[in-house]
Image (cartoon, rainbow, N blue to C red; front, top):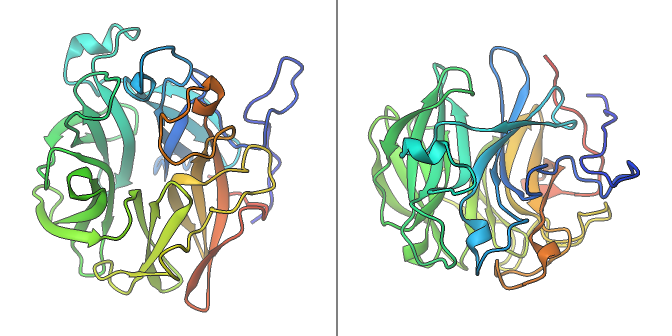
Length: 334
């Protein structure tokens, strides 16, 4: 794996890099919740992300709502180019026409390849709101090419306050969907399916302090779950992707200490891991100009901006380790 040179993700009027991020959203500078998948036909890497409206001037947390799903593409997983937003995700066809008046909110896309087609599990909110107190659900879509998506329907889960899906096939051969249930003190729950067609709720998978954005992957002979605790990411380990044990004590996290790269000096938030041989590449986002825990607690416009970074993960003596300052090697190219 060779180290790849990359162009700055964002630059000022003189062309100088604003920070060391691998990607900034060029529409609103609000790229969050990245998920990365390889296109099986071309070998290209695709990033889907929440396109927060970080530059709008609207009441409360309306800027976090009304978001679309952005796309970026890369040959090597480091040098990303913006590729627009996903079309056709709205239930109301009219909402697809008037982009200045969004009627749905879309968050946290989870995109998987099930071997036959691609599936997206998307958090959907009906409307654009200035506060948090509104129902949320997870809706499934399918695609043959990562570009054109067809709505399958809502996944029936444990409450009407569910967000942040993560889907993987467990060692027992069954598919599991992990998600945040805000109605259960913002903990991670799991549902199980034999065929990705029908789901049965299994119950709470991870308790403890509130968190969100679970990401599950296999590396170094173990299954791992990362959760965003808004102060770094909690790490949980499992032999079977069912019974989980926290790594370290209740306060231990990765990406909690500031990194040295420009723009990477605050907590690492809601990410996705691509496993490449004996390492993982963790794609996550930061708020470069804000290190708070409660979203919307700052009125400063700069606090809303976000940037996507990458860091390598390795398993050493049964522990998942992450040094966010170590240079990241490129992913395999087509």
